[in-house]
Amino acid sequence: MKLTDFFENVPDIEIKSLMDDSRKKRPDSIFFCVKGLVNDGHEHIDEAIANGAIVIVHSEPLEKINPDVTYIKVKNVVHVFNQVADSFYDYPSHHMTMYGVTGTNGKSSVAWIIRNILNQIEPSAYVGTISIEYNNVKLPPLVASPNIDEVHG
Image 1: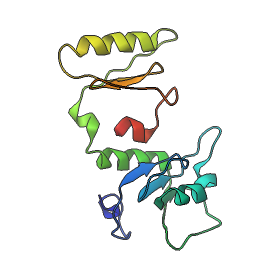
Image 2: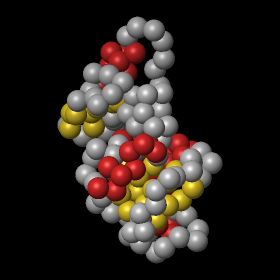
Image 3: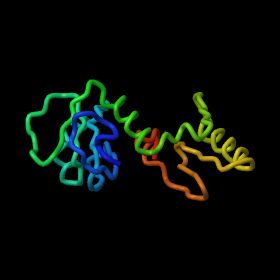
């Protein structure tokens, strides 16, 4: 996709992936500077660029600018990341029914059981602390809650 598919008044450059983890190698990607409780993506811009980011979406003022990179300042990086990921992955939530399980104990087990029941009717997925599963592919969970790119992709 092109950067112009997501933003106005930007260069017409090809985007191949999205990321908010600067440690991942993703050529021709947009890096979203997400601020979390522990880490702040703004502190990892250089690493993201070294790993392939050609566009930086940020909310804080930046001290250093790389002339080979496009910078886009926004008010809410997480909100913009969700919008871009939705479009980049062709609005996946529009093509499926989603269920959530809440509570104190047993959420992953209940969600896994529901997924297996629904799988008898149509292909179903599971995202939880046990694993991430879809179409006979089982991945280990990276964190308790997957990031925006993992949910949309």
